[in-house]
Image 1 (spheres, one colour):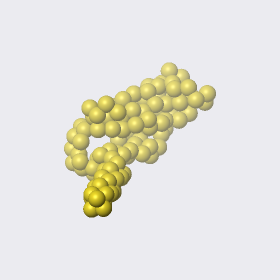
Image 2 (cartoon, rainbow, N blue to C red):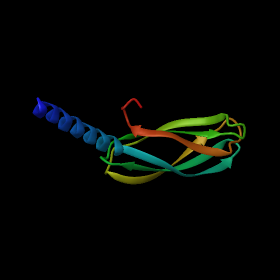
Image 3 (cartoon, rainbow, N blue to C red):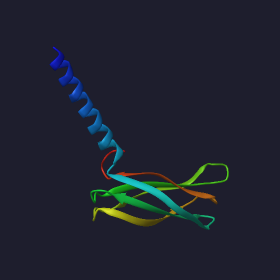
Length: 113
């Protein structure tokens, strides 16, 4: 009986450690490096994307006005390639002047995230 309980405890601990390790290293991570207000109707964002396995990536960015309204947004794909870090600049067409560019998300393309 004690051996059975110990076996279940060891298996549970192993699963917990595996889950924590797997979830701590997502296949894609991204960071907003900066943005530039190019004109009343154009904002550019620069993001850095880390692809751990070289997967294709889909990112979503948007621009905000002074009242925090979203005034432009777009999604874009980064084709599969070598694993590692890449820097990407994208333009966002805006309906009125923006004051910031924001990275909403980047995930493996087709992951439904």
